[in-house]
Image (cartoon, rainbow, N blue to C red; front, side, top):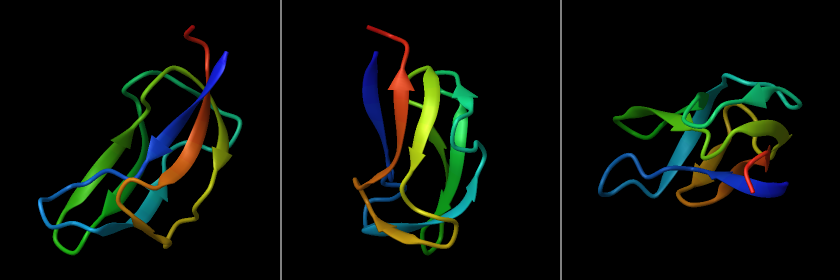
Length: 82
């Protein structure tokens, strides 16, 4: 098993940071690859953050309402893939 980071995506060409609007999964819950784990928004866009792998969401590093730079880790999944 390995730990895979969930990162703040870049929703638009000029996006530098985004706000976490909602976590769709809770810490300790199982997620499937490409499943939506969070909703984020920038100044004009709202987007989904999808799980990069299947496994357990073991860490949520930013809360709803937090403003997070693009590319920063917002969560961690303990992957079942080798």
